[in-house]
Image 1: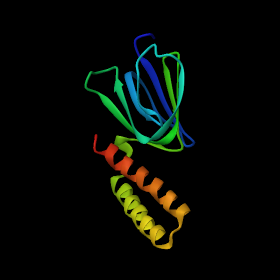
Image 2 (image 1 turned 180 degrees about the vertical axis):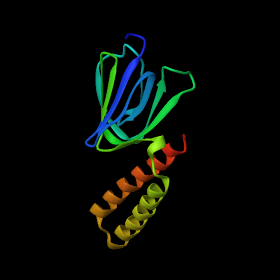
Image 3 (image 1 turned 90 degrees about the horizontal axis):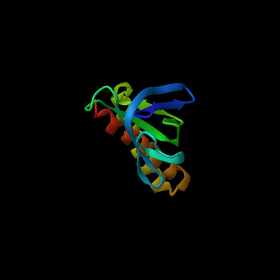
Length: 140
């Protein structure tokens, strides 16, 4: 148990990811954070970004997960990520993500023209989520 991590990614829809890992790298609101076995307990808010999980079965086996914010808790060699939504690279519908990106870009332009700050914020977050999903899907 001391030489690996158990990694769980959970959304309201259920468990997205559950595997053992040598290292987990996630982007928190304070920067990139690498978690190794025996890491001290920590809770950190996550950015909309990718999470990299280097699996225990092979030195070259890395899983990529698109996480749309959330919280990461590390305790007793367990890394738990709780997010509104998350997808593994193999599960991302790239054409759907591309359409979401185009929709968000249109919404940003409309918001700028009408000077609608709330719409601009929502559209910017939607764009960031879509771009994150597209980027993670490229790791297949």
